[in-house]
Length: 91
Image 1 (spheres, one colour):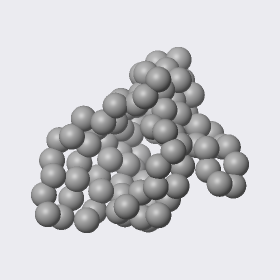
Image 2 (cartoon, rainbow, N blue to C red):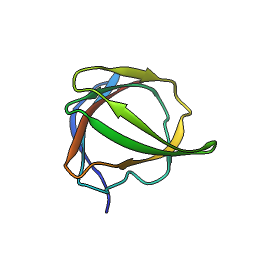
Image 3 (cartoon, rainbow, N blue to C red):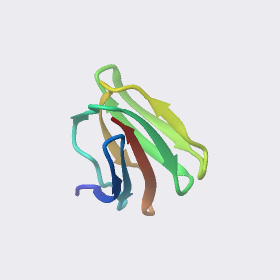
């Protein structure tokens, strides 16, 4: 099952999308073309499949983090409930 992106804003400088993950949903493997900030809307776990292996991360609602362009991974909802976050890509 695929996670779904819901675009909110796109300008010449940013792209803002809300991502929604049903239980077990995933993004599919992808590489980020821009630096980005993630703002979790709920608290829960995401499973990350990366070149170094698989790991789970605990995210807290409202506690943001940033990552550089070039990050390559598949993101999977490891919860029994819908997981949502806002992603802000910096062009």
